[in-house]
Amino acid sequence: MPGLTISALPAAIVKGLAHLEPLPITAQRLIDMVRGNDVALAQVAELIELDPVVTASVLRHASSVRLAPAGAPTVREAVLRMGAVALLDLVLEGYLAKLRVSTPVYHLNERDLWVHGAASKLAVRALAAAAPRATIPPMAETAALLHDVGKLLISRCLNTGVHDLATHARTRGLTFVEAERDLLGTDHATVGAAMADAWRFPPEVTDAIRRHHSPPFVNATATLDAVCVANVVAKTIDAGSGAEGLNVAVDPLSYRRLGLDFVTFGRVCLLTDAALCEVSRAHGVAA
Image (tube, rainbow, N blue to C red; front, side):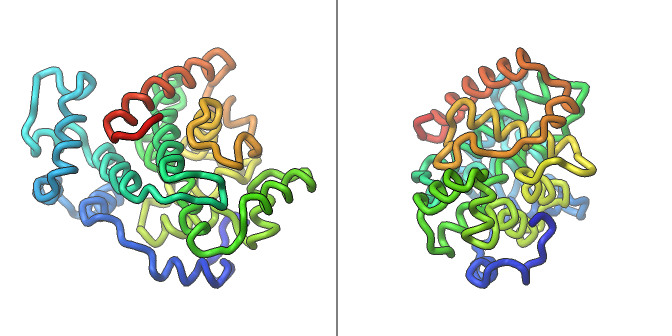
């Protein structure tokens, strides 16, 4: 299933992609910047200043101990302190938090999908700190935040129930994603990658979204390994696991390539859980 073209997707998903809501203009400009297009941070700052919710979030993050030992910044100073990738993640977090739609196909309520994405992103950050030799790139956090976004479009466009998928997986001895492929003709990773393509995310993000449920990984990247392990971390701390739970296939070599052992994995889980509580409070969501 990895690497499918749009024409191979179910017709309802193709139609849903055609009507996919655009990302906020600030996110679009930041994606252009990350992709190497000629966009200045000053232009991004001007856009942020027009959105009071994003402005407040940017200033709060840039004033944190991690980023701002010198004190409270202006919006433009905050933009420079954070950089394009961190700003993009912040805008996307707000965008996904505002969506907060239920995905009953996966037994996820209005908060669960956002919580799972946020936990996975924070897990990548904890992995990068715990395993610095892995040189996990910053865009891995973005990929982790969005890795399950395909569940939104599947829940909107395809008519099936969580009981059908869960029962099919259990009775056939399949992973949840394999059950999706059997019953839906696609899976949320493939659909999510198509959404990332439509939104013009960098190839490393799209690739990690597409392949995070398709081990063993050929030509694995640090981004793909980080997203795969971060997904397991989020599920281990029960952050938006839904019906899928831990019924996922994992490439055991991902842990080895990242230099993780059992103790380090446990520490990453603890750090992620603590960070998620803080982020959830900031967004007014119960973790």
